[in-house]
Length: 468
Image 1 (spheres, rainbow, N blue to C red):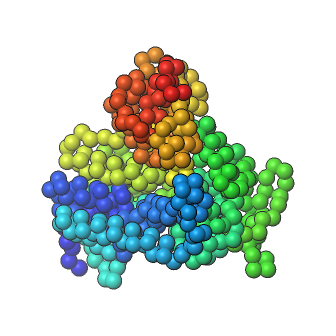
Image 2 (tube, helix red, strand yellow):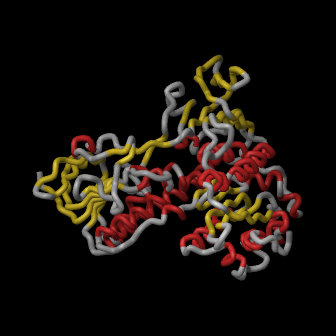
Image 3 (cartoon, helix red, strand yellow):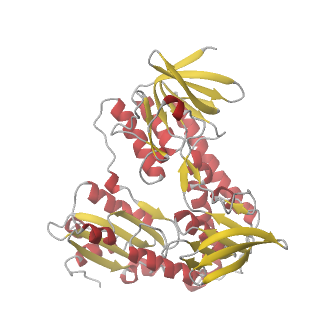
């Protein structure tokens, strides 16, 4: 069997993999990508970040037309939901973006192979990858980046069946609006998809094992988000777990255990969103002796494993399972191969929950600062006092800044409110440059804009907010 040789082989064409491949090509490498899916972009573009945001935007527009247009003086007949068209639009968004990556591969002369990949034993310092597709072939390179991403975690008492008990993949493509959707897990994925189907008419109940939502987020943000979602009609059972699901008389019945006892909840669909795990099956990591830290691959500052020439990024290694984290690691990994001193600032990786209002954060939470014994100052300002938010009729939420008590260096920013996902970028930039709350306070922000809430929160650090 003849082998085609490259400078770099990337296994996986998700956010981390495709960015690594393109950056490698830009730096002059001959690059190949192995992807088992028929389209590029991995889980993120095909069944995660992009389709979920497409449905979130569509369902929010439906909600606005149904419940909020009248206050703006826009009178419409009660809108009718065309779920098929909504799904078709979602698929069109996905196709345009995945096709865009294929175009970028062609533009950068990246060779792609369709099939599942397995690492073979190296020969003469060259790594060999077996690709099983319509035909089996072997490709080789001195360097290989593993970027295969992650998959949804199954709960033993609720195995996925692809129809009734599902992961996010299936919950993005329900053929009809469920009468009652039970969401297991109060994290980003569960709350976002729960929001989609709630807006479209489903009853949504969220069961979360912890006593709060979005573990690891700022406590005030989590509490305010809980109140907001309850006001929208979402039901929550916190400090509870689903012990099992069975079918009775054409309905699903979930057995939910909580401190007050056990109760049965009838529903149509169960979305299990309790986390994700690295997707490493079939890569032959054990056969090559690649060191692991639990389910994650152990890497050094160069993203190199203990086996020379093999690297790993994204959900396969330590850190949050976020597309933008994987993308940064993909670029930095290749740049470090090239001798550049690039690095990822892990203290400045934002997290976003795309509910409405949105929740976004970067850096330390107030709870973490207290636990670590770090002296800090707090500045906070609400959207209700912001002119643009009032014009938009989106006044729910606030911006909260945390800085060093002495020196004022920005330690964390937490936002609940309209377009928090976009607003957090200012905070990330200031933190990345070691900036202070005073730097934000002294920066001119356009008026009227939502970003003025960030400035007012910075002014509030010294109790000199103008509009509050």
